[in-house]
Amino acid sequence: MSKEFDEIIDSLKAYIDGERISGEEEICFPPMEKKVGSVTGKDLAVLKKEVSVCQECSLAKTRTNVVFGEGNPNAELMFVGEAPGADEDRLGEPFVGRAGQLLTKIIESIGLKREDVYIANILKCRPPGNRNPLPGEIAACSPYLVKQIDEIKPRVICALGKFAAQTLLSSEATIGKLRGKFHDYLGVKLMPTYHPAYLLRNSSGKKDVWEDMKAIAKELGIKVKKG
Ligand code: SF4
Image (cartoon, rainbow, N blue to C red):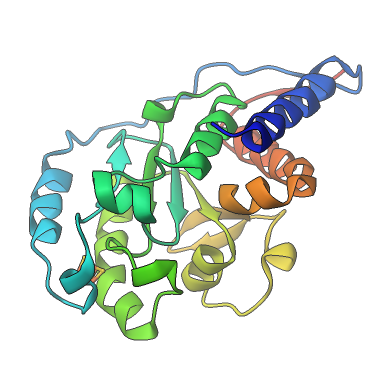
């Protein structure tokens, strides 16, 4: 883990701790309500098998592994990123590189564990050289994400970064304009925020991410008491 990464994590922790002890707010994290009814993950497993052999776009030729997504099939909070990077392509798991480690810390900052949430991407295969996804690739792959969301039925989706937010919301607005408030995505509340990879390069975004995470926590039943 690089020194820069450690500094960002420490900085994020310090900011969160500062918020907690500032006297302005006392933040409590009671357990989230469980949804009525649950999915076993069986339908997701069937879908994962289908996606694992997908040849619907040209990325099938260059991928090492399909990165379907992972997490709690009953998750109330789902994160959606852009596409797998090199580490994810190699391992077949979402958000496992430095940005993934930072995402884990961000999840933990609101009292959850990584295994409590579900994490997926718009695209299931890595674009070569991490280039931006092409419209045809998005059109081919997005039905899988829609099915994942339909199976998991999260109460809140957090779109990580400009690309995921713009794609899910069919918007060309900047992430700076989109973040900070809930939008509607197929009847689910969607909060855009900065991508962890952006935070690795621009630690000034951490305050905004913390504000967005607090709003998500509140929406999920987390009480934020005035001190
Ligand atoms: S990116 Fe999506 S549509 Fe394209 S091959 Fe991979 S799974 Fe199929």
